[in-house]
Length: 453
Ligand SMILES: Cc1ncc(COP(=O)(O)O)c(C=O)c1O
Image 1: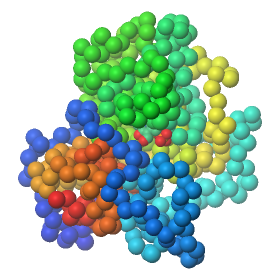
Image 2 (image 1 turned 90 degrees about the vertical axis):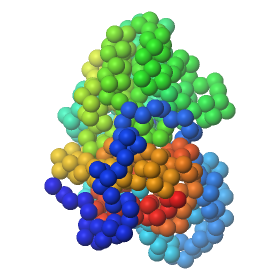
Image 3 (image 1 turned 180 degrees about the horizontal axis):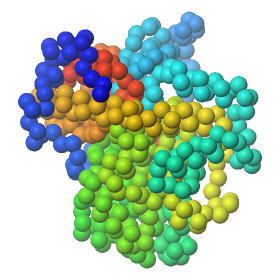
Image 4 (image 1 turned 135 degrees about the horizontal axis):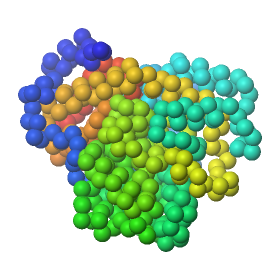
């Protein structure tokens, strides 16, 4: 077993009230599962208002960047530091200042920065000279990766794409295609959960419970219905054998504030989907692939879905998504029903093969669970102090709800050398690389404690 508290961080922790044990805290105030859906607006890549503006900066080689940033479309408001290097769980700006990263590039960089194994796998793939062929032709890596994913999961078939939104969009299309065979065109509705986030495309936006994100672009995909988590009456009136094609849920809601969905509700959704002859889709784009301490988040509860969408960490930082499905779903899909030019290319698939091999190691996953227990114990002890209202999460996916604005906490943390992302107006998200060391984790938590007020 790996110990979490290093000598140095223990000394630091001793000076920090956050080092209290779980027994010393108010357990009633610390919710770890079964919370209510988000009432706040999520901040998925929505920049905090308090983030300092980009100013002219110099690159490693000394060349000015500055005004070039204005050529980027203004959908993001990135923080000021210009990152030029990464090592382990730290990013370094052009002035050499290091930042502990509790964002992992929004859940992507599961192996951290500069990982030797990942670099070797990508290097070997590059040396073959074939970055891309399109799916007109066969390549070995995608086929091997699909076999590995099938071997580790409930699934029988895999479709590769390039992002989380695209994986979820694919999942919705496959569900509709399957449902049309089962019940005709009327069987097309998708039931999603309140507090959900599934992406920014026209289908995924339709099942994302964020009217402010959706309304400027309506009409989006028709047939989306929403149910509150644990609203039995709402589920019963919404789901229908003739109309429902699928139920979609994030086992741990990410952008909605890091909210593990109660296992009993996931079981209820499984039962309702089966009874209505509808598919159960798990969106594991953020919570899948080791993040919860299991390879797949569905393994935490024993509820087995029909379709799973994966993306963020799959190719270790290269863009890749995947849709996993059972043979029953796959049987409805014909050549030409769906496609994407870049999907499953040899380079990204080589990276993903390496990531999967590492993550599937029992010791890797056990370490994630141990680190998660440490966060639960240490940060759980902050509840009731410095504006900390609640801690929610599992594995290395935590949301710290505060009375203060999350954007202000993340801005103060940035100034103090810690990268954090909000997940809602009052929730700060902790999403460190899964390879974070004991010392990096405790150093980051020390900074977090120091910037809470
Ligand atoms: C659960 C979930 N699904 C889908 C997406 C969309 O992924 P992408 O931004 O790669 O399109 C996200 C992104 O945060 C997510 O958290």
